[in-house]
Length: 451
Image 1 (cartoon, rainbow, N blue to C red):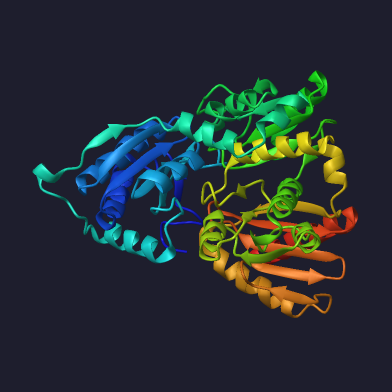
Image 2 (image 1 turned 90 degrees about the vertical axis):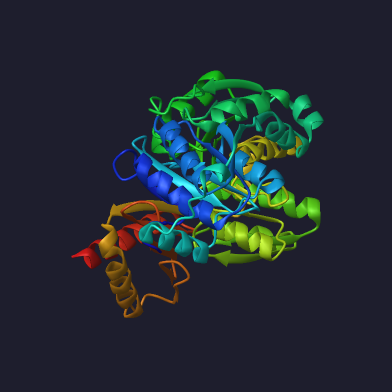
């Protein structure tokens, strides 16, 4: 990890770490390496307009032409870049609280720029060695609305007739984020009865925290039951993740919906390559084995999954957090298309979401996190590895990303976040109590290694 870039892009508190000056310099460094027309867009955060204008100024200063796409989901920017432009900049802090914002750079395929390019951007940034063109070569800017095209392309990728005939009632909770502009409209066009919750764009995120966790989606869970909906759909701030609530008001973990869509993709295509991360559930492997798929893994990060999908011509990919990647459409997680696909599966199978999930191989997962300053992460990771290597109950260790430990009861992965000063701990087992014990064991280890 570099000095500025995390798992995907740069995230800081707006107007504190992420100032207009910082954003303009960073964008100029990127623009110095990319010739051509660059698309810029962002989510609904209060600081997005300020940061976006600073980014545009930096790009123009480096001689790039700029297309301002406005406020829209991250995957919509990636779609536009892949089809029309030479690169892109996305202003978003995804699921982080409202005081944060961030800058993501993507290449001509709409994939987050690779590590070697991040290093070059950082080098130019810190050495102030930007390409500042002469006044007559400053870039030009135009405004383009890509949203209608993006929504229509999503609709083309599902069976509208089957969905229309199913009369599915959906509650959409966009979290006041960028999905407000897309998901309710797509689902209505597909024939669903749509009830909206937190679908007014508002960068203060007054309805809930933008991360679609069980704790943050209590209102959606209650609403689904209260109105007799078939499904609840929630997104994060930039609409690249989708989390579902079943018809009983129960939270459905992202690995379950990942497995449902994986199953459909493999059935429809007669098998194929599935790309996911080391933190993803064993159910993904079980489904692949049953339906002729092959699974390959990467470290955590959707841009790493996307890059592997492109390199290996993969069929489908995703993460356990509700981020699903359809590489024939966008080389990145796409919340709105994920929502449409899940509704399509319910319509085709003529089964409620709870039954579809119950038919999958059953595993139980637990997630916790603990604060850890950035400067301590490497040392904590080193100590963790030493501890588990000397633990006789540990059967196997995977260090692809963090430390993943396999025990008789299941597995647990402990890894530093690439976007926040925390360590994340995920555990999985075929027994709920064992999953809880594993995650508590992992958190205890992390805390011990911090002292």
